[in-house]
Image (cartoon, rainbow, N blue to C red; front, side):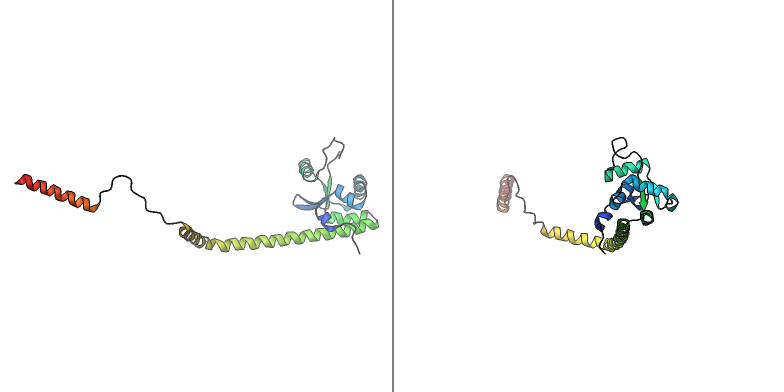
Amino acid sequence: MTTTVPIESIVSKIVFIRDEKVMLDRDLAQLYGVETGALNRAVKRNAERFPEDFMFQVTGEEAEVLRCQTGISKPGRGGRRYLPYVFTEQGVAMLSSVLNSKRAIDVNIAIMRAFVQLRKMIKSNNKLARKLAELEQHLESHDEQIQAIFEAIRQLMTPPAKPRKNIGFVVKEKQAAYSRRGVKRKKAKHAR
């Protein structure tokens, strides 16, 4: 069986709101090939099938965040005039019973696979995060040793300091010895 919509494009339409993975009514309507208003009317006719944990309407703040993320138009600007509805994974599954068409069934199967794929990715990311934390903890004990090694390498790489030349007049040992003898002779002459 071939799916009508690639799973990757469905995964990109799944967003997180209120710590839930959800899909916007507009994106679902596009996938099902119906107008957003028609989808919402079908849902409202079957409201008992869509409790709050299957579908909910976003708040003004959430709509603003979604507008920035997904490009929903502002109210009064030729776009939506009401806050969008979002559907959880269970709500999307329930949509297949409300929308009775071959396309709706195929799209629902693809969406369910996308949710499963997303769940697997999140699970593998959590495993990766745990392993990274373990590795960091393991390396913390080696930090001091590694720092000592780097310091030793830096010292080896630093060229030895060249001896500095003294500035000014330097008295050599022989000259100093002669001058001392000369001082002694003068003292001896004066003493006589």
